[in-house]
Length: 479
Image (cartoon, rainbow, N blue to C red; front, side, top):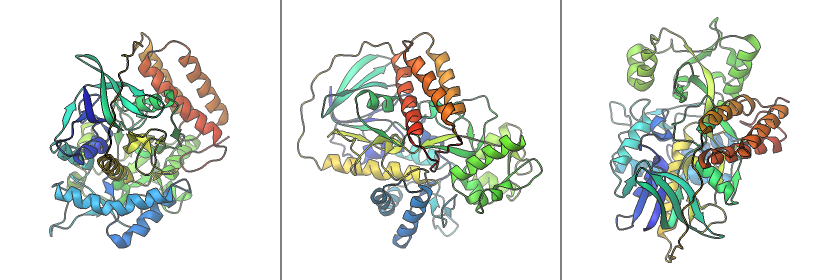
């Protein structure tokens, strides 16, 4: 079976790419689980964008400032400039962003933004609302419960993918392939990601000798309720701090100002390290104080957070919420060019969190992630549509490697603990070397293919952290 385009992933980047491809194209979207099991669905804060043409330079400046010198300036300029057209397109498609009584778009502010420029929908349910709307608009075929197990590559081209489903294993062929599979959340003990986000495609890129870049740049969200039994912890949106929530210790003291004068509006890496350091030094619990909110406003503005917290017995806004940083976002990824093509492959693209476009640098500016997925998936689709020639894919044998072995689940737990404790918010060279040794031992134990892919990605992250001698942005060395 040969398609014009295969898209791996059904988050915002994959769905938006599909919507840019006309109905007469034979397009297949592959989804590892149910479509809503993606990071887009759980995104709370909103979509950052330039409010108008005059705001583009400031949005660019804020993004570059958060990225502390590691951003690609041209990519950031593209991101901000194209945000205006993307918003117009989403409005044309009827995405119901939140508005005031006069019908004007509501904007909020988050850490490291100079002004309020983040649009949101459903209060704190932006990802859910946008994803549901895009799902209702797709006009191409979507396969659920379809896990990609290999990329079918030769030296210069991608011929398709191997996929396993409940019906069996297949090789699917395509003229063009778009990777939109998200980040690396499953590598960490505490994270905010959907359970499907497990870095499989990153591992395949490594296998085939292609490039990942800046993988050591991992963002930990500073305000997460981690005292739950699920692997995916409850994110407490940055918009809470943007609209008045305070980070305090057990005595109610706002200690963040000791670390950065911007306090709750400092960049995420600064706040995450401050909380991590303060808890370690003082052995004090850290809380998010919501006292500045009225209950009715909070329930309407942050309905999902309100529901989640009250289900654990918290009274909002009276009770302070115990918080900790948790892994949230991977700034690095599959290295791409200005058209979102994977370097070294003519017809293979990577968009969204799985890609390293250069817009995030060493520390992603809040709410630029959904925007990146929209902008660069649009660019990938436009580049595909601008091509005039196609090629005949060659056939590949189905892989016979075992996808999972007996002790893989136990080893996944070992990997998550190792990455959280040794490759987390604050890193020591000795700890990184210990983590690298542990990963290399597991790689030699005959694990199943899917765990092997995770281990290859973890190995790349650790090697990147060891190679970067000095602290920069989210990469923070303490020894």
